Length: 185
Image (tube, rainbow, N blue to C red; front, side):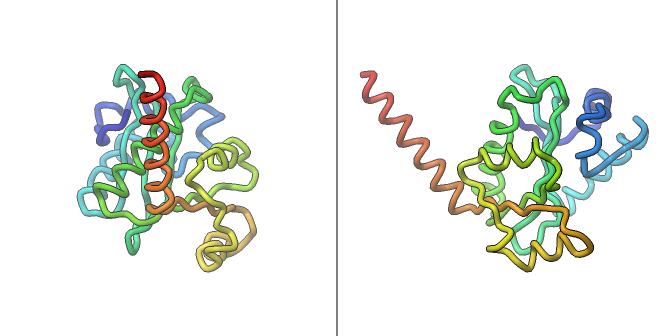
């Protein structure tokens, strides 16, 4: 589902990223294949320096279908940036990728909170965030961050995924799975 970024995936990812329904919402935009390769190399180097965490999202056959990233890491928290190619919208990949990424961030890499800065006009991303049972709207609970991301104009909503809420969600999910298995036996 997730793998470390690799320049060899650039052609497929660039073609997926440039779709008109995807491109406006990509944080690291590239207007040419060469620029995308350059940005990918920079991303890999930035991760090696501990400045961000970036993964390629793959389908069940290991084909690249998008990226998921944690940017602006500060005090064990950062901002999520994710996109999927248009052919993969609405097929459940987003939720699976986020769960796998959050699991790695919280349990392997020591991250405590992930923020999602979502444009108020981006109905698709807002709806996706609202579906996550471990994400909360943080406009009022994190006023300093909310003010910073809307410094010049009120454009973004702020969502937060905390390690505690995600852990609680995973424990509940495991308990439900165990109960279902017991009932089947």
